[in-house]
Image (cartoon, rainbow, N blue to C red; front, side):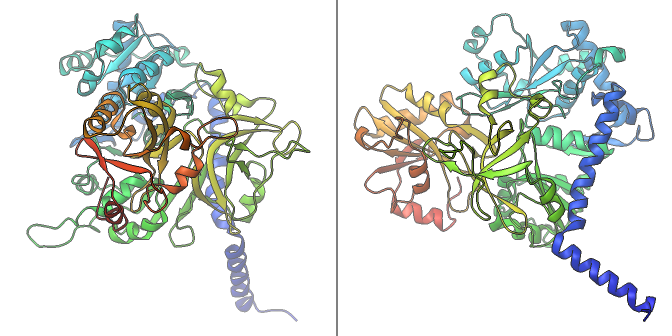
Length: 602
């Protein structure tokens, strides 16, 4: 018998709602549809030879958005038109003063500022490429990054020019350093700008170099990852470039501070904020801001509807949302040089703590594109079946290394690799993983995936860990400590600490002499003078040479000591020290209890 439409419509709606709840179809559409649209748009831009993002800025500056604010910094605003005109001035100066030509690479050693944007896009305006140097780097690491870029010109922020020591300059003969002083900035802004012809910006392939962004890797020094799409890729590509593409406004700060962050959010009327997990924890640990006149707590007095970023930990996920009145979290997982990404957009507890998720349809589409495989912890390589030679997927809920599929016939289409570093590029590529002839990209990260399609970050494999939103190379730290006369052997790794995000640096040390106050102070000074601040180890664990744990191939074993951390109950009779007051002092059980109780912030 016929069913009245008055009954059929609600029944159909209920059925669709149930289907959506079981399969997350609407979520998959929200994540996948923009990706498909973006791929189509890139293909069209390629056909028109408009891949250079400079054209997006130009289009907005000449269109309806000309007088809309694009950039806010230090209380000042620049419209799309003003940014465009300034970018042309910087491009003109780079060409006429320094002879920079299309495809040339220019290194930038800058803190966050409007000038970072102007130089970056000024280079793109004339078809050149920026190499974004981490301004925390010093000495050997700084010289290495500049040399690797092949840049013959380095533009330097006056605030970090003291890191360009004579030793660094001596290692880079033929490289010119130009400090962007206020006088030089005024000179650039007085130039009559000119626009280079489109032929200067021509690109024949989507995978051509757009910019060099450095990533700490397992070779001991940073590698330059080719990123087409402020020196981190999160802020530059996922932050500024996405704002530019959507015609929105971005507000940037010189450096992060819990005292100024929410003031800037309120003054700029920001509706979206970008974070790394440590940022959120710092904001939560800060005392509530109170109106001095009314006594009103200002935590929720903002216009933020969404926070997006990576590294927001499950233990503070909801506390962060609730305290600051944020409706949605968009957590992502990716790497500067990576060939894939994961997203988790959520307004409720379903996605809490997840770095990415797919519904039924998304899981089907990515069943071979993103896989988790077993790891051999001794070799720190994906485990292979001795009979077939193939890797093995992990079971649901178990941690495994995340691998992204690459096209075997054209690997560079998805993974451009490391600039001028073939061996490091090859180390990230795996062949014959699940079947003969397939190719995958190694992320170096352990993730797990539950039955609902949610991915959770588990651990970083081997020679890199993350602290203070920076990747730290264990090999680089070990190499620096190994140059100290009293250090016989150093095994560096990251340890998890209660109430802290990331992993703090810890070193198992074999000393050539007995520990003393003088030696501990000397080790701290040695590390501070030769390493970026975020890479200086916070903990030392002293052992005898006979107790240094090695793998079957005589490599230092990190897995066991990493799992023990700095819990005195797990480290046995080994002496523990921690960095306090500029030197290393004994780390006592009561210090551990204070860490566990959240009374100590590192």
